Amino acid sequence: MPPADLLDLLALTLVPGLGPRLTQALLDHFGSAAAARRATAAEFRDVPHIGSKLAHGFAEALRAVDPQAEYDRAAARGVSLVPLTSPDYPERLKELPDAPHLLYVRGTLLPVDGNAVAIVGSRRCTPYGQRTAARLAADLARAGVTVVSGLALGIDGAAHRGALEGGGRTLAVLAGGLSSVYPPEHAGLADEVAGRGALLAETPMTMSPQRGMFHARNRLISGLARAVVIVEANDKSGALITARHAAEQGREAFAVPANVDSPHSAGSLRLLRDGVRLIRHADDLLEDLSGVRAQAATRTPTAELFPTPAVSTPLVPAPALDPAHQRVWDALAEPRHADEITRALGVSSGELSGLLLTMEMKKLIRRGPGNVYERR
View 1 (cartoon, rainbow, N blue to C red):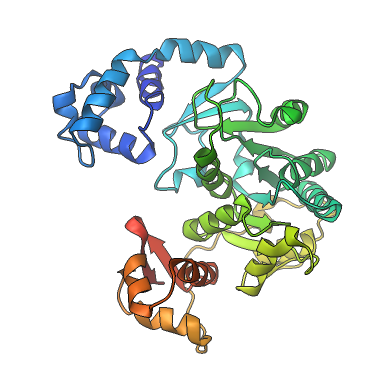
View 2 (view 1 turned 90 degrees about the vertical axis):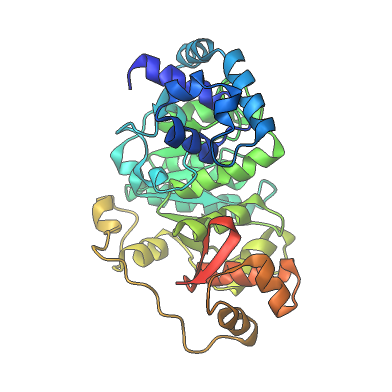
């Protein structure tokens, strides 16, 4: 992308509240980032999903941002700006309807990263969880698989370290900007990851991570991966959000068994009970993904590990479902909004969320735009 065009796109990225979907709406309406950047508040009001208040705010913000200063900040820290249209942009992320239009990348992205596996779990974890994540990541790395995680304390950090110890590549997706590393305890680990893979972010360089940004970050972790493995997660772990993103994105999801008495494992055990596939080690995962037994200890070409079928065959639902899931299935004779399903079945939104997640994981249903569900 020519430097001027890159700066125009960077300007859009710097506007608070202008996420991937609204950015796409602007590009569709105006034809280019440059034209969107020159638009007036009155012209912004003609863009779908942008009202008068947003139109005024976006126009003001675009006049105030300084993309050249942001570009210089990135360059000073060895960070590349990779637009969605670039051949270097991860192919799997391009599949997402809310893919970032600009990625901040410190390190290198390679084609082999297209066959990656995400390993996630709780920050507060047990020694068992850390050992399991590290061993799984190391074995996958030895098999030539890129390991993706979020650089957080606990399971994420163990996964990155395991991949490095296994001599492989690893990608870390941060919730905040790349000017500083969060958590600060992992600054050294971040340098190692950047040297043998990449740090990625969709947020401006100096932006500090806020609570809601971690959920958005999780969609990129699953979006980069061929599959997601939950090693150890409590009932409120963000790893469960990553599992939901995986289901929505059509990624495979797996979980590792753990101590049934430990609250640290409650979330991952619930996923297993709800139908997510169980794996014990890397060989189980590689076998399930490739359809053939793979020895993780020896490096195998990833093209052989993860063959891509020429035609995607829809999964036919099992003839027998338990009563709760059968009611959801019956309610989806035609696509329906989640709120409508809740009213029709007379269940709580929390209970319905669990049922829907299980059926998504089993590829019985899919979630569409606007929280509308339908049978596959």
